Length: 268
DNA sequence: CCCGGAACCTGAAGGC
DNA sequence: TGCCTTCAGGTTCCGG
Image (tube, rainbow, N blue to C red; front, side, top):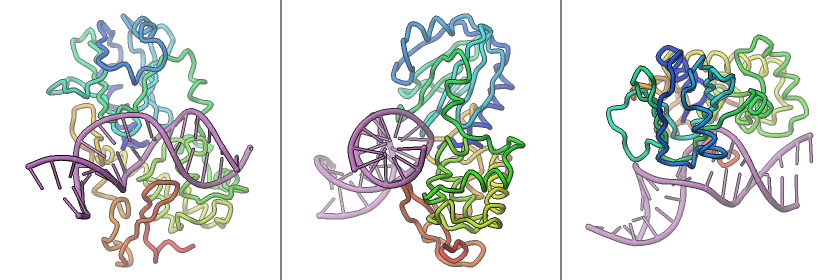
């Protein structure tokens, strides 16, 4: 599942490989991912140069020479591949570039989206603070948590709260901070908030260094896997032993999401 | 505004 | 072997 580290990895590879390239043809095998009119989508992209590639939350933003932006969200199983070995039935949209490279939007479950927007405002208004924004401080986090009567795990998944965390890294951050996933957000004391702030940053930074985690269908632009899942302390490890205390890790369901934690290290 | 749950989608895995 | 059910999860939408 692409979360911030996975999207960051893909963004960096795209920026390095296709910046400055021009789109010379577009093949739409499946229109579902495209928001709005297909014709308008094609017209806005055809012959455009990709001026830059950036990331905001879990969105990948392609700035076009026209000034408009192609915003791509990979959701669960989407990937952006450069010159894949084969074009299988999940290759939904294919862009040919003037370098004759193919940029392919591949998505098994068809949750992913692509849209042309005139200004970043369209997605900006849905997203909370970026974890690596210098203004994301323990003090700000403490303020954001106050008065929120929801399990901290649920709040970490809310993109309008902090942008970029998903199910895996929310669990990893809570474990690193030694905070129980069901603890009410407003009930975290100052040292817990400080630990959580630091844990969010270290967990994401470490995963980016590993090229993201290959769980489900995540792959890099060259089709290879990342390594971050080998470093998970709790995610998808139910029944296995905690690396810190040796206790069996548990899986519970929070907001319909599988949630992994250590019952001994993470107290209510 | 705040919160919880269903829906979207498709392949994998498990039960009988 | 084969059919059926359940599960996975990012985001949006809807209801209380």
